[in-house]
Image 1 (cartoon, helix red, strand yellow):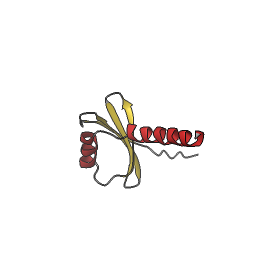
Image 2 (cartoon, helix red, strand yellow):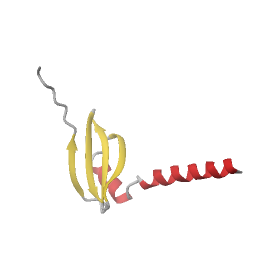
Image 3 (cartoon, rainbow, N blue to C red):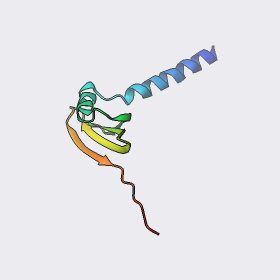
Image 4 (cartoon, rainbow, N blue to C red):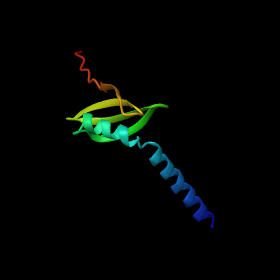
Length: 85
C-alpha cells in the first residue's frame, strides 16, 4: 500500500510540474506566429506575468519573452564569442 501511495505522489508531482510550465494558448499562438520554424522549445516563467521560451532557430539558441496576454516583449540571441589567443 505504501508503494502505491508513493507512486501516486510521484506521478502527481510530475504532472503538476509539467502543467505548470505550459504557457497560455494566447502566448503559444503568439510565439508560433513569430517563430514558426523554431525547434527544441522549452517554456518557463520569467516573472508572474511573463513567459520565456528557449528554442533553436536555424541552429542558433534564442530566448523570447512574452507577456501573459501574448504581447511579445523581447528576444535574445545567445552569442558565441571567439577569442583570439
